[in-house]
Image (cartoon, rainbow, N blue to C red; front, top):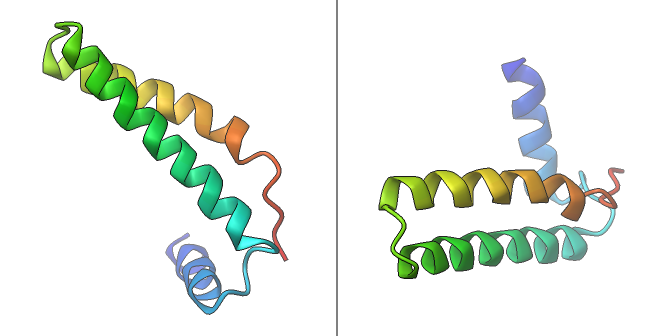
Length: 74
């Protein structure tokens, strides 16, 4: 399992894993911004920090597959 992860990481760093890395970077950036905004918004609403972290992490993790559904590998 570690060998597969290492091989994928090497291909990603060489630029040979994704067909269009720009779309991947854009979608990941959208997910990160969504998570940060959700975390800050929940904190501003007075939700306890541990709950805000858990909720924003869960929601961001649930949204990422929808953002990355069109990512194509080479």
